[in-house]
Image (cartoon, rainbow, N blue to C red; front, side, top):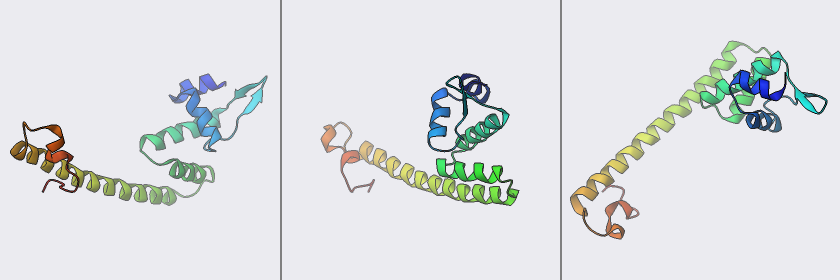
Length: 132
């Protein structure tokens, strides 16, 4: 199948496929008459790449997962990838919660100390105050 057909079948854009080839996530396709030609294995690989990206795995993590699948490694390897990724997600959530608390405190501080004053005097814009 041609690149446009592959893109449609996998629900990705043609530039995404080219990018994935450039960075080595997808094997370079065979060419026929100057056009890229793809097979069912390419579609499977692309669907896996898309799925990993939807789960917010990094490009490097996606590359490792794809290689594990292609080498038919045990499911426990995939589980290990997912456990590490889950740890990273939980860390990001904790960081976002801390950021949320900081911004909420700044908003509250603005409401009680400087509402109505000039923007440069706003507590939100004062470095180092962090909602104190």
